[in-house]
Figure 1 (cartoon, helix red, strand yellow):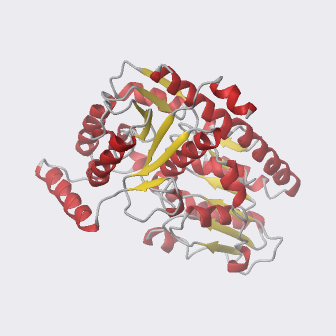
Figure 2 (cartoon, rainbow, N blue to C red):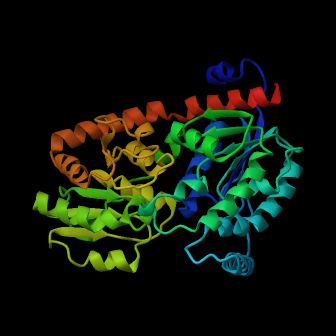
Figure 3 (cartoon, rainbow, N blue to C red):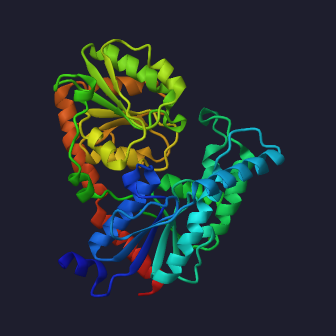
Length: 413
């Protein structure tokens, strides 16, 4: 009660709709995890919060969820239509930004009816998928959380041959969303700079980090994946998040695994999360015999966190990072992370506290710092400090208060 009084100073807390692609139980990525944590932190503060999705049609498996989404047929038709549209305009490069928006439209249209019926004081929406295209600001003020920003993916040859036409068309639609919103939240200073470079917006832009749902993380028991790999209980296990994703540095994964296994010498486990493509699988066939891999593919959020909790430390050779939910979650699980100092990673990782920041693309430095964590005393020390740092810096209560403060400024309550 004291916490609520401190937060709302005697006023009734607002009714809030938190919009997300899907629920984290389905293992749908950083945006979903971030928005579920925003919802959960506001709920724990006493706000009347509802969680609303626009990319799934499953029955709700927790009380406050309203789940909407496109059918498989709608997804096929919309995906094919966007593909043909871009090809007709001359696109010959990989394109998915515009398709992400159109595939979200059926669910967003369903969501619009629920938004009107609920009539919340404010709705918090992600930029990814652009559900704000069809939501009405006359029902409630809209707060946009900038996680994605397609323009970041061009002019960087390390990220592949990105279709500029696709990015420009998607950005134009997202600018229409920006023109409707009352405020923008960026999870990092890096994303604030990118947002200001990309869009025209005269309203309030604030930096509020993504929160960590401590109670959810604590409720998930560890699953020791050493059993699946046939490893002794004392063997270290290295976590590599989204190992098959090119934006997360998949091109470096096999070399990192090979080099770390060679340095360690003994039996060493690796948890490679996410979908692993055929190219990386082929590369991983040629590893030292002491390297043991656990690659379950795409799993739900709870399973992923249970696996992470059994890891000793992690390595993320990411090439692009708006914030780094995987880094944040690992820290909460007492798993220090070694990663490149790129984009928003320095706003999550504090060097020497919850991991190590390595100059961008310094693969030698990345492997050397990771190898240092084979020293048991150092790994134990960083594991402890990682959990303390993450749960203090990104505490759900602290960040929920920042959201409530912003909402009070918008609504005048």
